[in-house]
Length: 250
DNA sequence: CTTAGGATATACTTTACCTCA
DNA sequence: CATGAGGTAAAGTATATCCTA
Image (cartoon, rainbow, N blue to C red; front, top):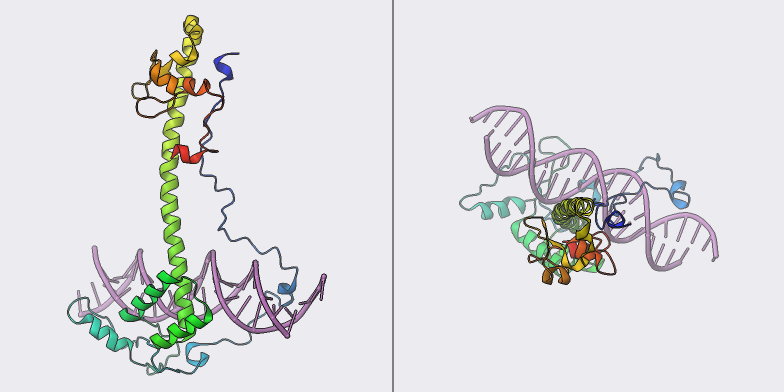
């Protein structure tokens, strides 16, 4: 037995994305009412912005192709508000392509404000917002959908960065433990008397990565900088496993 | 209890517009 | 000045889920 039996406490590294929770799962549950409509069935009615609803408030704001480019300098905001508050009847150029709504800064600000308070407003709240902003409810709905998507995307980016850092830390720890293990094996076969010492008397300095005889830090299981050593961990009843105890690693 | 259908959510895509080299 | 690439945000589409009649 001996050092060959030392468990590898954290030698398996990975981000563990085998089943990302947010991955879209292909629909395997079309056995109920959904497949009755048939995925290939064409929509019989396509609503467009112009045909969707009457311009109830008269303030849905679209850029006209001929009105371009708000300037970042000067009275851009005023100009933008002015442009955006215009009603474009589309088709002045004969095209029936969709025009793109641009929310004004005040509209965006109010939407942001309400998003802070409630990221998924109920239908009544949406309608109230729409009334206040002189938009259609659908536009408010879409804005919240896209806003939630942006929030989620940003959060995913943050999580990804954290996982990268965590992975780097674990890789470094793994490398260090490997090295320590090799030194211990070497010591075992070259100088067996070392192994007769109580385990707690041996430890490795994480900075110089050499085995030493310090008793105090080894007994504590932590080196001066807080790193763990194999021997000190081995003297404890359980091994440190960063995968089952990730918070300890990162 | 089962089912149809509406409402609404998410995920992904398309499109119009803007910025910048 | 013109232009093309790339980014951003609004809107479209497909599908899932929940609720109700």
